[in-house]
Image 1: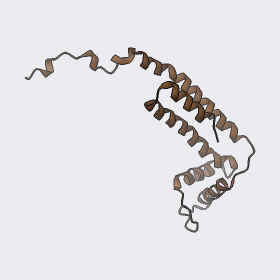
Image 2: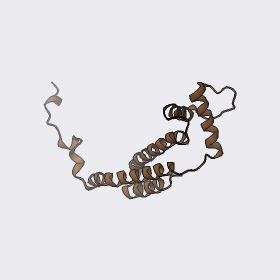
Image 3: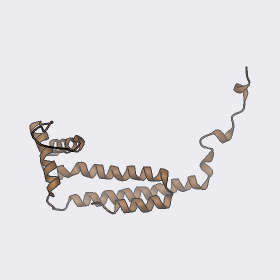
Image 4: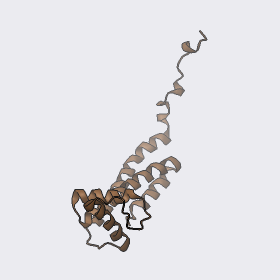
Length: 146
């Protein structure tokens, strides 16, 4: 035996050892602010769905492609010169299949992706910046739903 198995476990190596530090406790206190920011951003985006605003030109064009996919099964869209990735079109086509070909069905995938974008932004920003900067940047993103 080389003696490694008989060594005592060092308490500094435990992952829970550093939880008494103030900067770690501040992160746990910040979760309430982050959740509030996400709820404000989601509320603003959901409230914008209720407005009676017509599609702009690009939104109408991509909704028509997604409608063709949903109604006719034309997944390749071979007769159109399309240079966009297909995930957005397929999500909108799935929304059309579930909810029918309504204006709100065309905008629902964008709503969910926008809320997901806020959450991913918060998670990435928390790894790079301090808490004050993260909250300020998250507020800017949440309050700009367009």
